[in-house]
Length: 399
Image 1 (cartoon, helix red, strand yellow):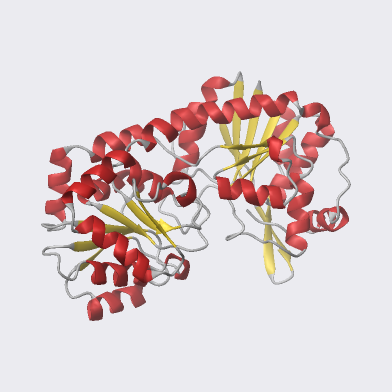
Image 2 (tube, helix red, strand yellow):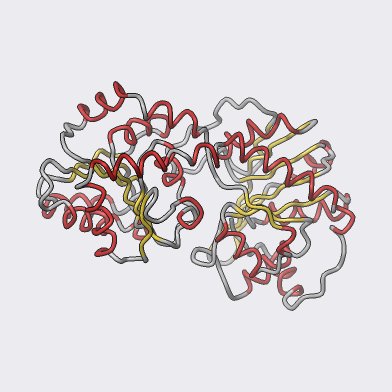
């Protein structure tokens, strides 16, 4: 089976999936729409162990915004002649991948990690997405919440497979569980008591102050308890000012850390706080669990409902419920035995969702959808098709 994958950029977790999935295909070609996301501290043009190309990118003015297109996509696909084309998201380039598949009778597979809490649920954008989803041979969702969203867009439930976003969880488990690494990491940040961590960009939707407030309340009477905050972003100065004024010396801002060094953060920590809203998945959740770090997170983050077993490897709370978050943190921070039991259960995520397992599920899903490719071009009559085609032709759509 020849597989072409059209995705936005070489994100580390997707690169890991492609690296392991490639062994299941006769040939695989990954087409990146862009080299890098300026907002992410990811390596530009990393060395990759699979066939790939960076598509030529052109910005086309469209009203008050610019639409990015990749004019050489068609030529790349025709030259490769894939049996299956996988499109990540709903960009104009993904739409063009769909039209290629419809013409060539290859199977188009739509992969998305968005949920009804993060992505459009009404308007012309939804019509555009429905147009793509309803003509796909099948869909791959990054979580059960993402699968639910695809159903809302009109995907047939029988043609949806869930492949969790993940990475090399075995490596994270092994490196974070090393006693010497934990000691070195805790010495690096002068940690002595139970430690919570927050990892993420400093954006309004991450609610970093909620994490700080919940921690301060939970750890009031716990000697030596600390919170380390990893990240930076547009809200950075406001968060720094708040921590300086209210942190009571118990919160440490460590700045951004390269993705390759994140295991040191998990090794030093006893619990991860993840209060984010409008979060499509939340890679730090699955990474922390693999490291044996229980997680207190919101129910609506993409990874939460699938990965966190409430009371067994962490706690789920409602969005912006600082009191509930604080209660969960307090239970973990004040009880070494609970930390051990939650941590042991957290590590089982490696046996359930390591990238090697998800790569196999990914390959099996593509093989299944390839067998259904005879129905790819079948006309689906649905409300919104005309609007969706108009949206696609005019460049509406992101992802």
